[in-house]
Image (cartoon, rainbow, N blue to C red; front, side):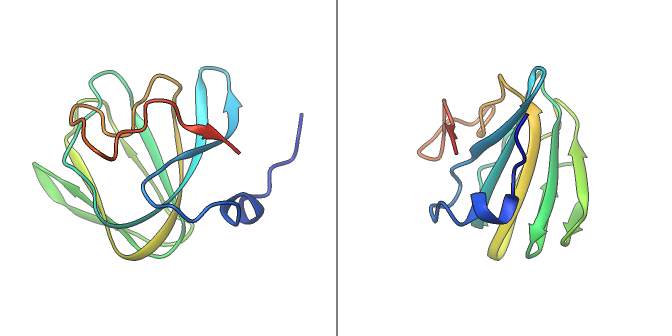
Length: 120
């Protein structure tokens, strides 16, 4: 067992849209990311994702639903199969809780795909 300080972990990297693993809970990973701009529209066929905003404001765009705005300390669970796109006007720091098998771009592979996130 090891304590994880999220602020210290976030200070270890600057790159955006590149999730970093900070903990493991059974079959789940806890990841941190810094994001700014628009991500690709995508879904995860078999995995739910939990997003928690640490700092900044995140807009979660959903194909068939209204945009959901999240601020610091707020979470959103995106169920498997739901097409979504995170958008951040300014840099946002997020925590994600998702199955180890989850690839960040889901059904939309591209230049931001991270097959094997780095542990920090």
